[in-house]
Length: 90
Ligand SMILES: [Zn+2]
Image (cartoon, rainbow, N blue to C red):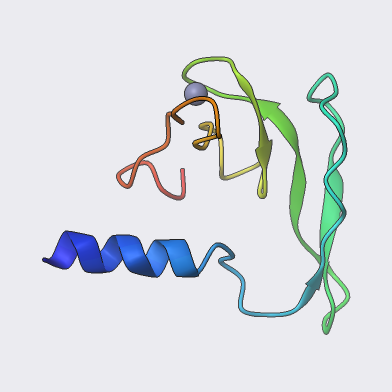
């Protein structure tokens, strides 16, 4: 019962930060080196970086909403991601 409830919460809250932020639009897959800052709209400072990166586990490129914290690929339409609930946030 608790597991199902948790999954529902995760699905409905894709963003961690409650503060409004200027998020760069996703660009097409590159060599996984480009990083763009996400700037807090109120404080005007960089809160995280987004970009393509290679999964630490399988090496598959994926779009990371926070390249410093999200290092495992997420599920995509054509494949299952390496990230699971235990890895969340790492
Ligand atoms: Zn992976």
